[in-house]
Each structure stands twice: as structure tokens, then as C-alpha cells.
Length: 178
Image 1 (spheres, helix red, strand yellow):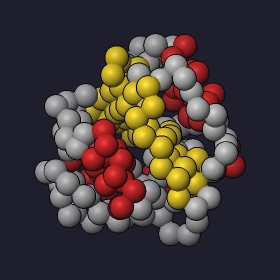
Image 2 (cartoon, rainbow, N blue to C red):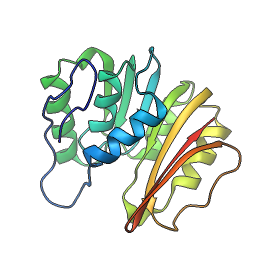
Image 3 (cartoon, rainbow, N blue to C red):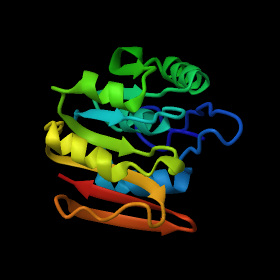
């Protein structure tokens, strides 16, 4: 896996071995960022299920100013920290080893410009997460929300502007704008 564009273009990132995380493939990641950017003039991002940190690091490479990554797995957390250090982005990333519910409570009061919602497929909680973000006013006007999930496990949310919906085999990716 690699950074596709921006100041860290072509840098290789570590990933966790095995099937505990499923990083977004470069082709899909490139499509997402070309749809919502491709580059940013600052902003704050949130990745509640960080995996390798690749989405947040791609955003930083393309101009996001600050990123918050949460991850409950200690093994994945080590990979994220290694990736952050390899790009010398420690000043711009807050990495938290917390359950997503605790992390959301701690992050209340911060408004995000870009949110990645890619929980383990078995959890099926993207709609619940969207509710929480709106209810606690955690999204800036115009914020993008990237949702990755098993096909059929998320109902479309009409409170947001639908930007794009990708379907690939057994999973989908939906991009909303607040």
C-alpha cells in the first residue's frame, strides 16, 4: 500500500498482516480522493477505525491540516504509529487507542471537514455513527463523510448530499457531503 498523491506521493505504508484489517485498495482510495478533492486547503479529518492510518495519511499528504485516528487494536495502533513516524507527521496526527464510542465522546467540540467511517463489516454501525456526528454537531458545513460497508448494510441518508456511491462485489462505498 502506498500514498497516491501529494507531498508524500509514492511512499510505502505498512499494513497489518492477516485479515484483521482490510485496507482500502489504492484504486478505490484514488477514486475517493479524486471525488472529494483531490487536494485540500487545510481542514481536520477523523478516522474512527484507523487500521493502518492510510486514509488519514493520504488526506494529510493532500493538504488536510490535522488528523485524528482512533484504533482499538494495539497491533494496528503500532502500524499506524510506524506509518506516521515514517512520514514525520507526528505533529499533525492525534492517534488514540480507544473504542470508537469513547473516542467520539472525547472528540465532541471538534468540527471535522472529512470523516472516514470504515468499521469492521460485522459491526454495521455507519447509520448510527452518522446520527451521532449530526446530533453532536461534529461536522463543518460542506464536510465529506466516506462510508465503507457490506452491500445492503447501510440505508441511504437523505440528511446529506449524496456525492458518489461505488459498488464492488460484496461491499460499497458511499460519499456524502454535509
